[in-house]
Length: 222
Ligand SMILES: Cc1cc2nc3c(=O)[nH]c(=O)nc-3n(C[C@H](O)[C@H](O)[C@H](O)COP(=O)(O)O)c2cc1C
Image 1: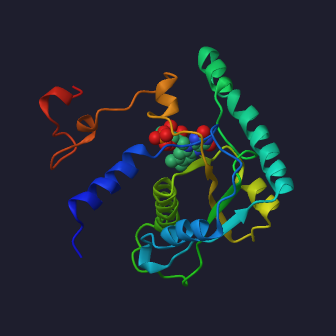
Image 2: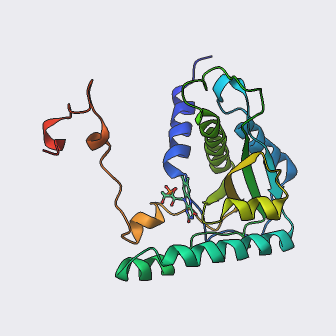
């Protein structure tokens, strides 16, 4: 089934206008059918050997969110100590999660034992199952944007804490904790770029032709 030009443009619009959302969540609930659509998009991600290693723990309970926020605060304080001087001050000024404000949280996990020991495609590189769950996260992120829902990835939480708070079994690996909700607005550029944390790299500087050492003249590093 070919994609029309209009459909192609819509996909690129979603890709270029997706943002990591932290501070602009509205309290409006997400209708069940919308939540189901974005979860179904996540579930249709590619996965190594079609093992579909993900599960989704949907969090709406405020008490649970409070516990997750406390876990974030702890990891965030530890992180601040890892930066020096001005970077530390800037880091501490950043809002890096919307756990309490977002109406829905979703923990995406990976069951590394889901389809037995030997999985097609995971034989040479065992981490492929984790990458598959990350593909589900990205599908969810783009589907959310297409629904005008903001989404933010909160990685500043120790996974052991995430497992304890959400009763995730020992053999399951947490991959992402995501905040989800309607927003006041989407930032036009990544917030970390806007505050001067890092610039967006020039895509052409990252492309190598045939061999790592072959890049266009103007991007040669030596
Ligand atoms: C694996 C991963 C983990 C991330 N963890 C966090 C996080 O803990 N807190 C946060 O504010 N943003 C987090 N982000 C969002 C990035 O900071 C963001 O994607 C990047 O700055 C580019 O901005 P954009 O997503 O708005 O384009 C994470 C993104 C990824 C892919």
